[in-house]
Length: 143
Image (cartoon, rainbow, N blue to C red; front, side):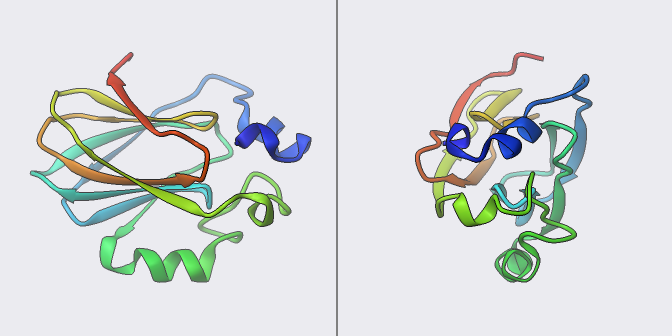
């Protein structure tokens, strides 16, 4: 799906330098946005760490789950939820829900074409929203 974006937008999705992980310690009912292109909700589980691996153009943004929908509507395409290029959000299909139960420590939530999030401890229930036609998957952590 991300490959169907305009060439200049796909170029921004590609890392230009070493990807530096960003670590978040989350409580249940917190959300991470990845630009305006993806979202992860930590629904249930004990306090956990989430390590984000995304190109430098995407700075994950944390918020409370109860405020996430409103924040997305107010900020997508600007300041907090920047897309890789100004015309990209109009071309991104609707975000589709994927629900996962993390059954092993150090599990990656993979968003193909964008990056991944490593969930530190098992026992978490998460929702991941990604564009339609992007199949979000789980794997054992690679790092």
